[in-house]
Image 1 (tube, rainbow, N blue to C red):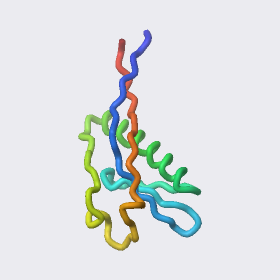
Image 2: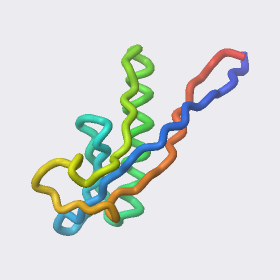
Image 3: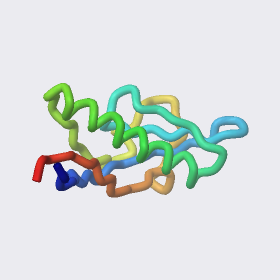
Length: 100
């Protein structure tokens, strides 16, 4: 039986920080979502992939999906040298299989 794949599209904020030889990326809206990449671009891609997995799990377990937007540098965790230029906004499409 064919399925029609619907998507939820989320706009997520991804903070990226240089961490020794790699780039650490995290999404403040998603507790515990931290990834690394060899480049900023790779760290952002890894973060988007992690958001997809995170939200898919929330949906599977009928949990609420957190939605927020960083609007001020004061909202970022203490101790990190992150400026607005280090925050990337990305749209992430989360697939949802729905019977046709």
